Image (cartoon, rainbow, N blue to C red; front, side, top):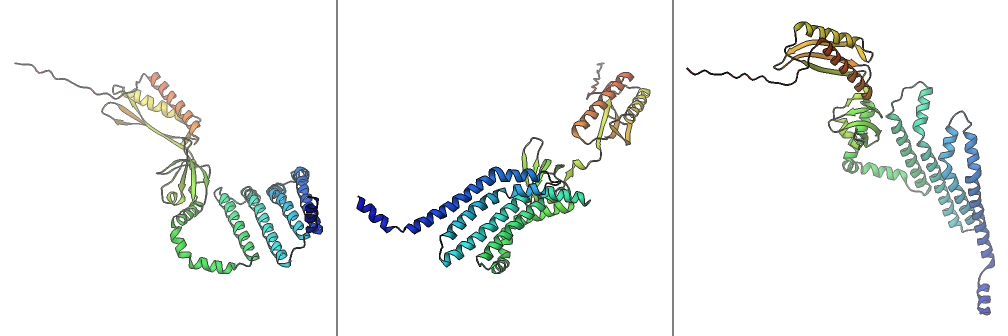
Length: 359
């Protein structure tokens, strides 16, 4: 047994074992550095950046936290392999892998940072006094992410001596086939472009189309997400929205109220005039009613009632406040009718029976 162990030890190059041990120690040291950085140093840096007048430095640090932590591991692996004195071919391969990984880490951090680009663009536009629509900001953020990914892939491909120009030329040859295959996606994309340029609605607007009604939550390259009043989330392709009539209730400057007040047929003429006058005065003195246009008129003789036509607008466009104003107006109209002794008509029909006398 002892002789076998001695023979096995003689067959092992102790120098190689020592090199492997040192390489492993180098890797472990960087793992420890990574732990120290994550636990203490990073938190301290973030705390210091929060004292800055802007959030830019803080956002950068938070975006690159993951890549920096991964960088310690990558450097540890690289130095460990470098210490092992690899062959020239292996060294070239290792350097290429390292460069590719570094590109991925930088792209990772920039991709994370682009998630905060919407707020950055918003603050920048505010400082420069530029009016930027809320729809454009998410598009800019998504476009920035797409550019980061494309650039990272291009740099890595160049690092591995892949002919990017030939790839682009190949895309030109296959462009027609791609366009045919992605026809629906392209329609949705250009539909999104139409929505951005024409701005029929923005995120947060209450819209109504033949296919859906609700509040716009998000607009992407392919579709628009709308939260219905039943709290269901509906995803509508942009090509569909671009070809539909869209009613944007949020853009209302004021909200319309119109109805016919039905009163009994036996109401005297002077009481009708009094009701019309008092209702008109009430509306013109109501704080919730827009005073630009108010109509209160005795309008029509119906078969079972007389009708007073009312047409006016509330100042508010909020649904809840609108209902409160409308309720208050209705109650005050009822009060006026009670004071004047006028009753509200209900659908009715008078039937007259003729009695025939026999001679």
